[in-house]
Image (cartoon, rainbow, N blue to C red):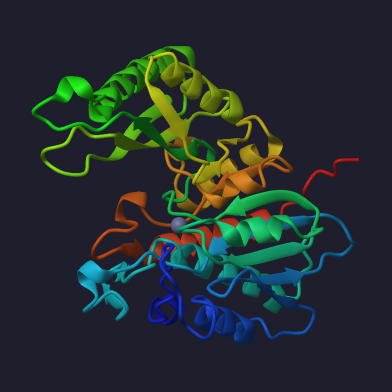
Length: 377
Ligand SMILES: [Zn+2]
């Protein structure tokens, strides 16, 4: 199954114009529809945009109730730097190589195997299982946001991403926007007649670096590195012989659980505004909340003991610096990130996953699906 999925290049256009006739995920969607064409299973395509779609696979429980959500994404990042072999799956010992092997088709395969096993054994899980095969996780998370808009009650969520079969209960959130410093152009023989926007941007960048140090002291996190303010791009100036009238820096702001996103952005805007330069801020290009599930939540503790049983007694709950779709459910129900593979292999050349981990995670997911979830009432 994993090899079949890797061979379907569901490459996310990553914001570029998309001209295909069907969403990039369609091959995977159709494959999953065929596999889950089974009695008792409800399958629904959820259109998201011209480029993306979700597939919702629902298996009922003994009684009605909120669903236990399992989500993996069907899209993959481009593989232009190893296009000759990225979509030709290849095994070597316990490893299977190909784009999407660990991010995220290993998780998708393990979730599908877990649910198929329950269906084939004619068992009924305590809560309905909702397997969401999501689109567009890699670029704008429009898939999970579209799912979130549906009137579906969720008891808890497991988001498949390569965590080495360990439950990740917390991760950072992200804010991205551009900060433009405005100056005034002048001939470079008379720079005193202008206002150099690049020099202004230097002040802004220095202030952002100091602000990061302050935030790190204010918001230490036991599970991950602290808040990070990274200037990721800069552009300014028009020609070599003019004082630049504008300079724009792109900011990637990673927040830890417990930080208020709006207050954090307002803090940066106030700081930059205090520097004495004329500055404008763009709208947010990205806003994903941190994942802040309590490690004490019974669902997390149960998931941890199941992981230890199938994947190793040394497994611990973790925090991670990266973001996932789990953020978009975490305000409604306990959510964890859990799946086979190593995040360092995701988005990399010769991406791989260990087949034994995919199998172990399938057993983990199956046990979570069958866990007698304590009723909230
Ligand atoms: Zn992923």
